[in-house]
Image 1 (spheres, rainbow, N blue to C red):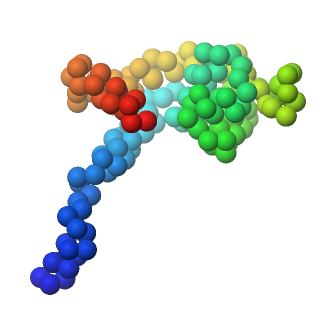
Image 2 (cartoon, one colour; image 1 turned 90 degrees about the vertical axis):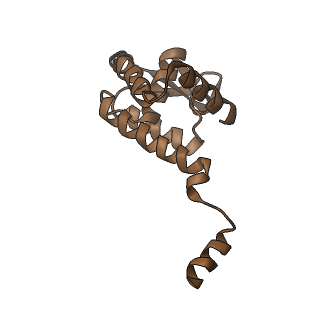
Image 3 (cartoon, rainbow, N blue to C red; image 1 turned 30 degrees about the vertical axis):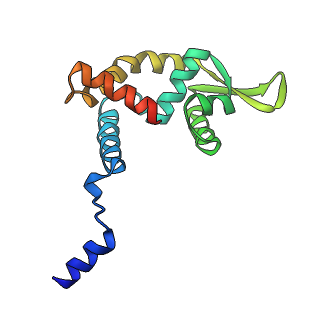
Length: 147
């Protein structure tokens, strides 16, 4: 018992199950599994986010695409490289600043987005299924506030 008491004292009342990060991680894992099950074209969540933003804006600098999708420079570069290999995006030097790379969605990328929209809606619905409509709105608003 002394060992268990020493451990409890060392934790100072800290319980993993009381921590928001624990539940955010579990919710994220659940959402990722749902995403993988429903999403078309073998797209990852980061690839989907980039394609959706490019469908919205048509063309963005790689840097701005990263900011629009909340990805750091290394992550967005990897995402763009993978989408480029699949022919879903194209890149070209920015005409206003050759040091910048612009990323544009291709017709194949637009088609992938069109195929994925209903899946994306179903992913959100399935992720939020345990909640009623008011709780869904509240959760999304609370996540916006802490993100």
